[in-house]
Image 1: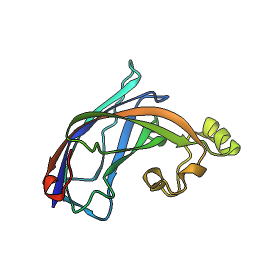
Image 2 (image 1 turned 90 degrees about the vertical axis):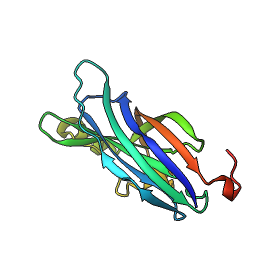
Image 3 (image 1 turned 60 degrees about the vertical axis):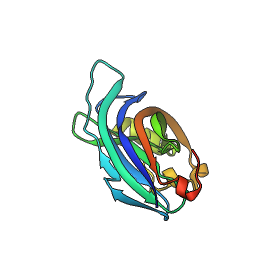
Length: 175
């Protein structure tokens, strides 16, 4: 069995309208992949930085995968949330990126977006707060009907990922 070990961190986020941000993440993979050890989902702490336009999390990722094929390569999907002064959580953006397919250290910049919503939903957001959310969050990484969405670009999440391969040469995969 070929193995991929992913070690790194969700480092930071930039370009979002407010501070007090946290990030929920998950790792999605195809049917030929299994998790040998580690957590494939989690959440960072809230970073409230008053004097900078960035949130720093340094949240660790350490997952060990096994696979019998390359199809369904792992993807990291993200949701960036804002915690307001009243303790309410507001979704700021969705994003996803593929786990790098070469061994070594990588810095991955993951752009995020949010659904724009209808005219009335936008007015409601301006006066009451809240945000438009997807009914099926798996659209973020599946791509099935993502082309139908009307979205607004949001900030960028920075990930620092170390990728280690083992046993790929036995399956004829050169890197």
